[in-house]
Length: 310
Image (cartoon, rainbow, N blue to C red; front, side, top):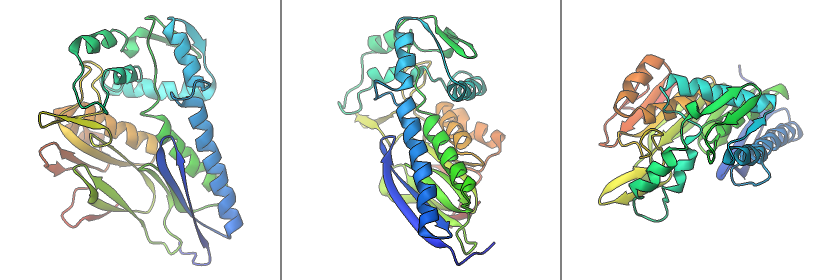
């Protein structure tokens, strides 16, 4: 549906450690600003709750209980995030694991050297969702020194919530972008789709593909965000929670879905499944695009024309 009388509004901001922007078409600047304010405030609320960098976040409180092998009651929103993470853990055969963030202590991507296997082994003793007892609303950690990290869930959840808040405030045309995790509220005001570029995993300034999105969400995972090169081999930040080592098969995965949180977990699980990831994506049935470490690409939305309507 076209509505060319609407005003275009864009706001850039930084949240969750990444550049973000909101683009909206609304009746006037004031309406657009009000919607953007509400969306950004909610993103900041979630960051304050679930950031592992903030000692006063609720996540830090959970991890203080985890450090001593204790228990903690959580609120409904946190419980829902945990439930979703448990579903991902089960559907990925234990590869998507919110207790695996502790492995970052071994992988210092700013140091350019591989960690000692002994340190990885030591950390792996504190990894594994099966070592956590989850009886809603109580989390109990059976091994002292564990941690949980909502890194693979919360930013995507924030995207979905921001889009929903804007929609609730009357916005029908817009796009939310939190560091490449994207949710389209509806097409542009003239009915045309949004052009969304997918970054090439091996060339910072190049695009792998451009998608034309009328609605839905897009999320990507890759080995390019944080990585080290050692003896000509790239080691990325997507770590297998069973081995403690980076995945080495797929370089990047992008998935389109109704919700960003689903697209995001699907792209991450595909990376973690390594050689089985492409087949798993095909079975999942969501539109997707992948590139492996040899530069071979494929997926249901892989095109030669560099533009794909979804």
